[in-house]
Image (cartoon, rainbow, N blue to C red; front, side):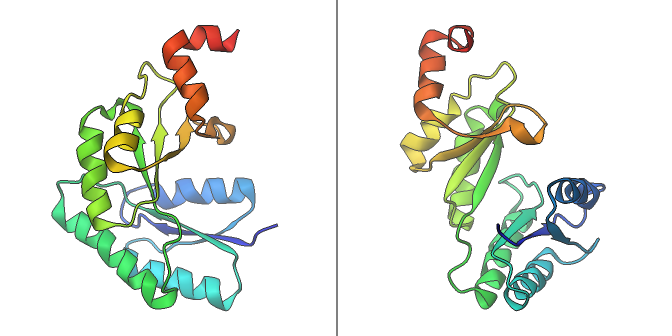
Length: 180
């Protein structure tokens, strides 16, 4: 029942816009993209479009970045500042996506992102692999950030809301026992 706009702010990576376009078409939502555009400008245009055309939800997909790349982290902070010019209370939700195989480095990465952007949660991907996702407990404990979703594969239905009880049960009893 929502009118949704996706802003493809990963404007320089080859195939990024096409990948998002595929998913937007698949689920029936609108996308705003412009290859090689300044990501912050595109976000500004996206939020302006959302307000003007009465979208109820906007998802902004930014480029993946390493926390030690100051220029990219500054760009992320700039995106947030620009968003606030259109919608002062934005972002309402800011999620950092981490690979479950990242390990302890994920804590440092999350901290740097938290210093640059008002993160509200974490998404852990690749939980279908060999990783147990131990970083989940560290992030919750040290950074007070909830894990909101986990990725268990590459299909649309493989992104699930995170259930701490189910996760802990799987860690303590074993994933095989949980699936029986």
